[in-house]
Image (cartoon, rainbow, N blue to C red):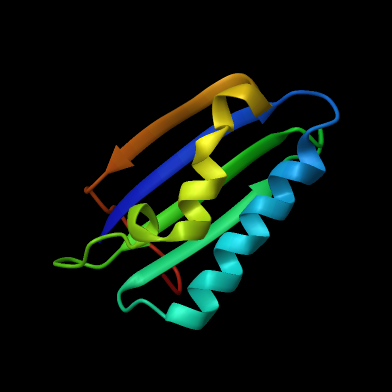
Length: 99
């Protein structure tokens, strides 16, 4: 199982706009139900830092790049952010619980 963690901070006043775009991605995922993919998004207590965590099972591709809602989300991400997305990838799983 591979994991991708993305963390970024949006500009003041842009958090709800960003969250709405994220919700559109989840609506599309719920409709598509891509196999072998797990995804979660969190906003930290500061209200402007977002963390996305995606897991793909071995042999599966992440569906996000092909999804129109995700493409809309990414389109203006640089303009929404104070700190741009930092991407961390891992394929070494040490352990997990219900993942």
